[in-house]
Image (tube, rainbow, N blue to C red; front, side):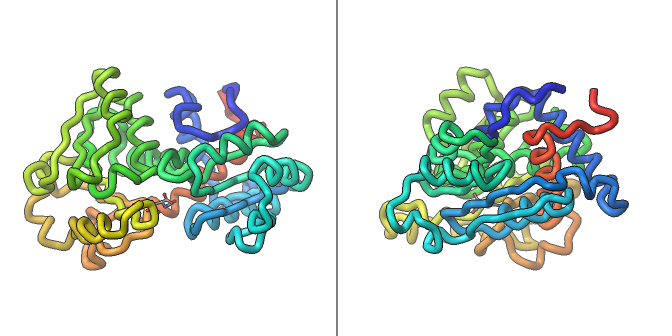
Length: 313
Ligand code: NCD
């Protein structure tokens, strides 16, 4: 398949066919994970990871993916050690990184920062989260995880719980799911409901969704529950955060009210939304979800760097 976009900035950059193709490729990386089959695939290639916001999973899984494909990684995990503190713009940072690397992964607190870098850069730019906007590579691993655990992306009811206003992983995943025939249930306090522009888009596209504040009233019908952290750092007024913090906390009691085959996901990090006692139940797939990030990012890096695989269609 011809991969149309060398940059990955928004989940809307992908067609449905491209999303499915990424998931298929990720599966092949997972299957070949231990046999070293792809260990030279990106030999000689350099990835820059530039993180202007904290990260554990996204940065390190990109790094792991690149190194497992034989590439190398440069970058910074803290903007305080970069020239951003001297006033350098992301445009100029991108002009530098294109000299030093073949692909750039960026996380920034400003919405649209990744797009600005992509416009400035001659090498591909991958958005690893821009403010409350988008986190497309997380979405690819979320879809991969749903597909792997449920065997399908259609005919599911997927619940989203927590901070639906500021949660960029939610925004990207909901967009992606509009390609599939699944229903969505949004569960949040009113002040953290899905943004109006997204609700309008869902209505325009005739997507079947519902909104509620009450998890118990809807949890029985869910096949997947995607839990999110309240995004404390995005609140303009800390008093507003105090009003909603800890609002949903799942523990083993929830098991009485849900389908036995319900899968609970979380992009992580968690704060207090999911009690540790759920970790060992069959419902919890959030650690496996994080692990899937490596295969999916191997797929994405190999695609933007135009590496073909032997049985590409
Ligand atoms: C998420 C993020 O950065 O948006 N984390 C991640 O990439 N796995 C979720 C979060 O920070 O709550």
